[in-house]
Length: 279
Image (cartoon, rainbow, N blue to C red; front, side, top):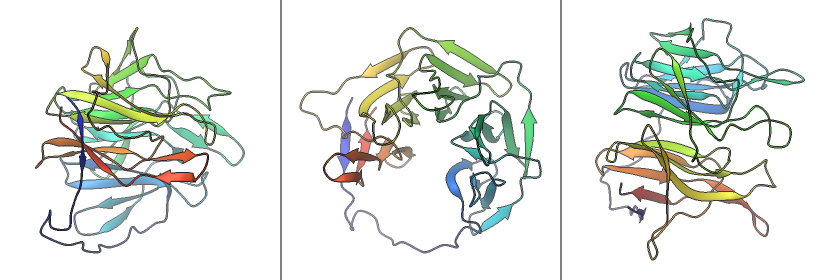
């Protein structure tokens, strides 16, 4: 099992870029989640002011359409936002609630379906937190999320030993003796080829004083395992945040795209490379 660096040449695909309509709002801290059951993408972010009401819009395949939440939804930074295959909607959990002068943290679970938000009432919920790593396991029909925290590394707590799964009705917490190194903003993605969730990279602390990571972990629903680098094989460099996993159905590969880090000599380094995991 190894990474393969991908070189996409102009002749690789037949086609071209086409500009599409812009989103109707300018948001900050934007998150996207696709709902294949309704053939739409939800764009969810804070307003121009972090403490203003959240701004959201829907991509319907042709245009971005502004969507009014319909409930008194607080502005939320770094929540979990992903597809719920059981309820066939988009699940929103947690995040930092932004006030004019302070932060508070949420552990509310909500579902976006049929154009409206519904607050769900699970019997068990994780404690309030944000910047969790998460993905949807479409093989087991579970949402998996790991860790998260309730402030920064200096003042708050970080739940590196906690893995939670959502089954469509309730949250189940799983404590493991072996778990990934403590971090924020590690990216997670589900690899349908291996049937496992993967976690890559992240940062060990606040901006500017972090150690940036490039380790890889897998979650099979029971156990975390670190996948070690194979000697002589290519491997992505460290990247602290904005890296993303996305599955390419034609290639049948989970792709790792982008990411950034801070270098003491050159400042911010933005990665534009693409890597494919062979499972």
